[in-house]
View 1 (cartoon, helix red, strand yellow):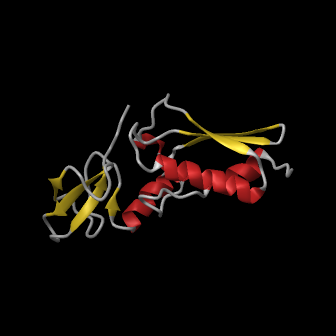
View 2: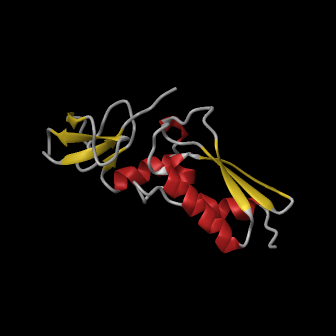
Length: 151
């Protein structure tokens, strides 16, 4: 059995990406809540972005695969409270979303293509359930907006 520190395990599992928005890690997204190692067993705690998030099973599987690759026995626990909000996203997550053309979850939606605030919602549902489809009135480009979810 391999014994690793909390920091070593955290670094490996924090790099797991969101299958719906693979530019974001689970750490940047803010769903990685805790990593503990006791008696050689790693316990990874995650919180879903919302209760029916279809990506959670895949994220759990990716974490379990990383632990297996490390040779570390472990388990993944789901924590529902406190609930996840978009405030849990890191500034890096917001930057990465903009970089790939998805407006981050801000009060005012800025077009990630041209930077204008002249945007309108085209559909409440975008590429994933946590995104809305927007259109920029200035450049005319459609884009996704990560919906804000506040406490």
